Image 1 (cartoon, rainbow, N blue to C red):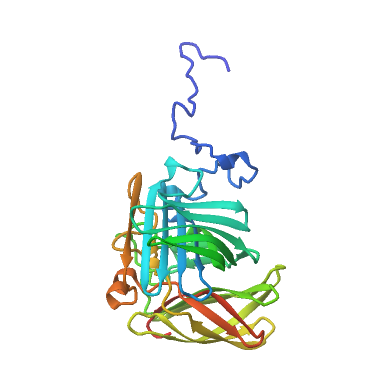
Image 2 (cartoon, helix red, strand yellow):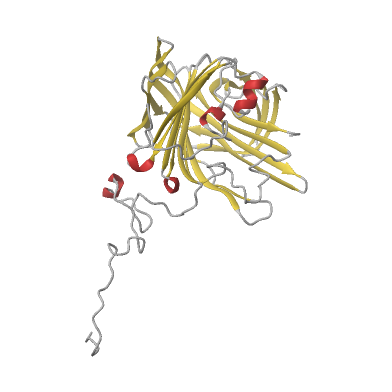
Length: 393
């Protein structure tokens, strides 16, 4: 275009001149691969919401329920945070190590402090590791193998009871399988061979990330509804001939004055990818009133074909990791994704997690190792049962 008489040509600004205009996130290793889904690098996510989280969580347990290892890693892109926890439950005892760091210090992984997570074969095998550390006398290296395919759960999409603000919008897949490796606890090395493994991986918007906002209307579903019953339970069945199958259920009930919310999903899962879906779950479970620990009971399930069967729930002792120590629902003023500085490491030991004093610190949300008896199949499965009970359910 010709320059107007008496006017100087203006230089067109570039991204270098105005870095906040049309900004592009930095390149990561993932950008080398053909997996882009938005017009951005993998350093960015689609939304700027501070609750955006990508998280992996899981447990490994001895088949007799005597010991469990628990772990979780979270990546919070819009907070520049990676946090992780690793722990051990043995009876009522619990050891926990937590670490946090800036995401930008190592953007291509979710390792933090002594805690490491490595994908060996996508959707099939991962390795979890806790290096020896000064926080707890606990270290481990375990390879987790999915004997069953990963299963995507239904989208968890919740709005406040007013119908406006969305409090959760995430998807999750879980996997059931086995674990091998070693654990060292209090100087004693424990060999792990064919223990039970369950894990899940989720991403999206989730509640309880960061400090609760003081100027936002509380959501009764994500705060403390008058009546809550939540049950999330993956279980591994293994026959004498080596056949492996699983059972998974997720039952969520919230209720208050003039409103209620209930969802159920899951079913039987098989190695060839087949699934027999649940239509209905009627739990008949007992809980200790002192600490809301699951004591056992049964569940009447209705499958998609209309058939009904009863599954008997046997609790395998006191072992079961309290997830509050992994910052679920917060722990002593700290929450998932909270900035703790460039690098932070901490942890604690509980001699008795079942005491009312400990439950008050940790909250009641915990894993419980169970044996699930299916008389129709004539088989018993071993797995995890996470519960939260409040009010009349």
